[in-house]
Length: 101
Image (cartoon, rainbow, N blue to C red):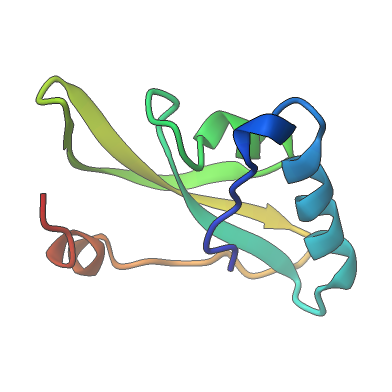
């Protein structure tokens, strides 16, 4: 599970996040990578970045509002590393229960 990838603004555009993900893929002994990413209107963990790295959205849930008019959507994202990798699951109710805006 990838909890967070954050690249300093000064290094934006230098493939730092892609390199970090490549290192995760090469070094893990697990069968897949999974993360929770967010819609592209937010400045962190954008789903579009993970899609560009071979991840797909398995499920999504709206978790709240940003500036009252932009929905915050959490995406359960997954990238199998072997053909028969089991798909991850999550409990959206548990995710939502821990949020406090």
